[in-house]
Image (cartoon, rainbow, N blue to C red; front, side):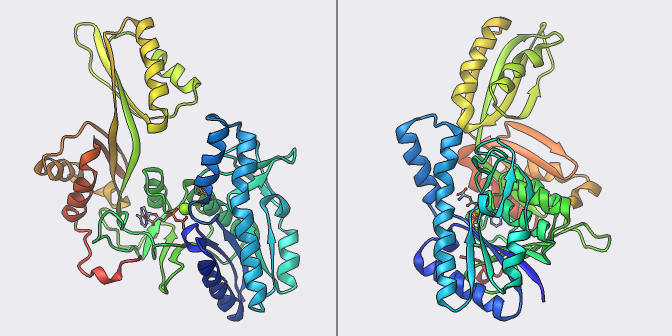
Length: 412
Ligand code: ADP
Ligand code: ASP
Ligand code: MG
């Protein structure tokens, strides 16, 4: 008998009908003989609705109170799913994060899990019950409710699987696995049988939100077998695994993209030691995360400096940069919040030259201008104008041979 942690995302529990569908699936797995811990998200749209309410009261809501509000979405679905299971004759019990005792740090809205008390879950499992746990939430050492950041139910599921040493953590969602790129943008995207933790981590951090980054980190660190599958159909989904020597490596596993980007440039800064830190210091202190950074080679004693930030931080960063420009005697500040980042990801890249060249040529052939470039061992990212996102991703998908000829296997 296996112990499985199953997680169902927002769309999968988006209506009463869908919750009943999830209950059927869980019941079937239970009858098959598996012990089950089920993690659920809030019904689709609910977390955004709650965020909206909070912002109507206060445009900058206090993080502690926001967590009190946001955590209610998941509390509704655990109750509904447990009721549905019990009605099917499948004994189940619901728990909030605090009740299980998913202990987190106190970083409201982006808390990290520190520990999980598995005793209560074990007791229920031993009594033959399905344990239904609210995703996305925990409690800090002072008893405050915390949440784990958007998409955090994935991380709850993986953390529970790690704590319980589950045989597998199954992430059920509205697509039937991890694809070569977002199947909603490229219709010919192909489902991957397997992807390495390393690649999945890059894909997630470069914008593929099919799994929250932290869930992938966690699964890699604690060796949790992790699988992404559809909650609406059957099929093996995608297994996230360690790299194996005999694994036939595709050159490129996938293409990730991120629409939440903005770039800022400060021109004509005196080219002397300390300038980068003078520019980025205050940005970091304002809690603004900087992604790509480019400093041009200096000419006539001055240089230009460009960096990207999350689009939500754009206005704040621009204001700060204008102030910094004044202090440094820079010539000009400008910015653009209509840019996106497109990235190629693949461990096969390590041993192959020429991938960047093909990427740049493909984009050039489509008349797409590259604004910034950054590379690492297993990825190449470019920043382009937002209007070229779909065109660029599709062209690259074809150029690197990722297209699926058989479109019937699409999820939906
Ligand atoms: P859930 O509510 O179940 O957590 P999410 O919306 O968080 O679901 O994640 C699933 C979505 O991720 C899909 O609907 C798909 O549009 C998107 N996605 C982005 N990149 C990929 C990818 N490479 N493979 C599969 N899905 C992807
Ligand atoms: N409900 C939360 C969100 O929308 C957590 C999750 O779905 O994983 O971000
Ligand atoms: Mg999600």
